[in-house]
Image (cartoon, rainbow, N blue to C red; front, side, top):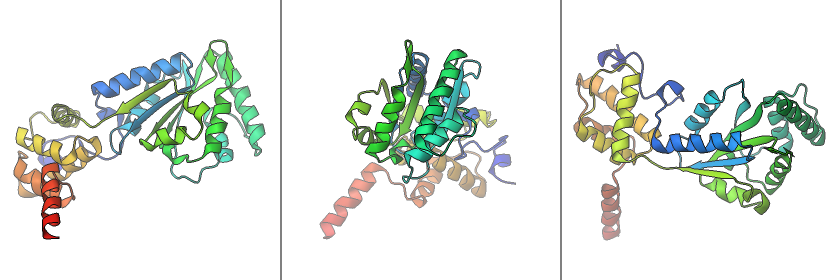
Length: 286
């Protein structure tokens, strides 16, 4: 028996894995999705989503991919895992994602194959889009120039392909490596941390999806979770998951602030006021 059974849940509500069933349609995520869809539908070429760590960029990317109907879009998601990416590797990956069969080794040949495939997609009436996550990894002026070349592929209605870049705030600096590329950003969205009210609604939403029929977290517990997590969804999940585990161990059916406090502190999280007080105390000692 674990906390899932103890709290009468059908599954764990605060998993760190991205699961579209638990997608929370906050106002900012819904508005961002609408803007990105507009950029894709009107063939704008380049849209950008920036946000701090844990604010839901990957979750939004996965949701967008799921909502782009295969009957209208040729869509793919590419997640970058390291910064040693070359344009040769990237071009082949993009080609494969778009359905190019047997991409060649030479970059120029691959770009030609991509263009020919984009024409095929366009002639079938579909819109081509590649969603790219962790794009701040592309710390290269040359790669930005190459993307600019891909965005030069167009038809009278607009660009043959629309890229949607997701990344940390550093992404804006990466785009600035090539000013003409930066100027091609047609739509930009910025994801921020949740407010306290939204944090509470987010927690209740995930619990409902997991099968909860009651309020497991008290208002004081939710307030504490908000302050420790600073409204960052990933941290909210981590604190809530650990609080439920602690509640199960203590056989407490309701999670209150007295459970959240030690759990969050054990995770190394601090409330801003406590952090500031600690820094002040250290300065006094010195």
